[in-house]
Length: 534
Ligand code: GLC
Image 1: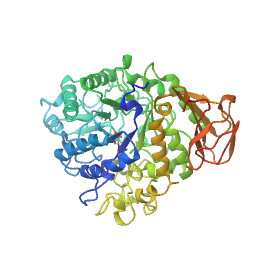
Image 2: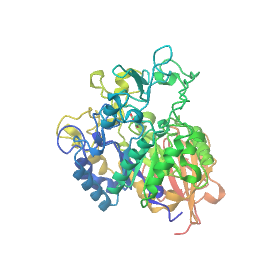
Image 3: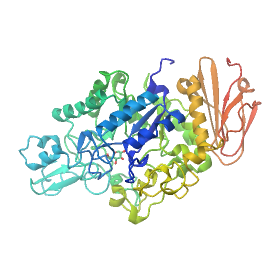
């Protein structure tokens, strides 16, 4: 595994561009801002940045509604600034991964404008237009992910169009070869400009049932759950033909050197594995989101890791995610102390970790007053806690007004604790979560066992998650106390005498472990088993 590719060994850092760094004082992050913070990312030690969409967009869904796939939205900058960012990132040793949004365009995209102009339009078949159901009303019972029906009536042409998300995000028809060709050539456009890969948005939605069958009710739905969950998305997501489309994307990437294809699909493991494609001809990394929804419990997480490892096809490379721009932040889910244990988990499991900006400084979800809500999901479906603004607030670089993010008024409020929880303050503190992240990343880089080694679960008592990572004769033990009580863990005979390399408190390195280890509440340790070289 020493010849592992960069996206196998490396660590991906997700940047939500509106919130990372604002260089022009308009309160919205931009490309020049990201560029100015590359030294920080190099210091942190990550290998790649994935930037959420920066394309021209009316911003109905903050960039996930693209009106020009080859343009940079002026709020984010220009193509020249983009090229400069890629150039500098590469010079710094960082790869650049773009978001690719193939499932839908903006309703302002010239393709859709043309498509909706008339039934005879050359682009009519680029989107999913259907007549009303025989008795009137939408063609199927399909629901939008963001609330309400997924069909929008177009009075001018007397048909409905399908949108899995907002009505401002009409779905493309990926069964149409012209659509495919157009979208694949968008990928080439950016690959030619030097990007190192794509994170493909909502890939499992790409193909819908050709017979337009109604989705069945979800027996598990209860009031309080988002309304679109009332139905099982049997005929709107994860259709078998999607894999041909994924393989076509992959073929485009394979014409280039060493690029990566990452796919976003919230699916159970058995379904997710199909996205690696036949003989691994699909996604390099179908995102594994199972830690995001997991109860924070040692047994539950051990079971997730076991199931995932067991389900991976031969040769498929694993990956892990703790948070992103759509889900509550890890620190808010598990608390400050466990966020450190979570960091150790993410960076020691087998597989590529994706780190969400700000989690490395322990950013929290920021409560958003009703009048300040920006997210269309929250606006459509208020009060259920589905809003995504809390995890999208500006990066906290320093203290004072604007927190080093902007000199203007930030587009979302800054966290109330930004004066304490910020890069400047935590960078100089050897015990901070930022110092922990940096040490974990450095250790992962220095130890092939962590980056590419084999994984084996270890027996552990109540509340503790334990596993070994092994490579080239070196064996590292990872012992994580997921509980808030002290735990004692007996080490197997061969492990006694292990030397601590790193602890979540950053205060136990060098300690020798006996046959039993005392773990403090909320503490994790990485130790090297004896007998190892060096
Ligand atoms: C994905 C994105 C999300 C977006 C949606 C529609 O789930 O991560 O932010 O709203 O797709 O494009």
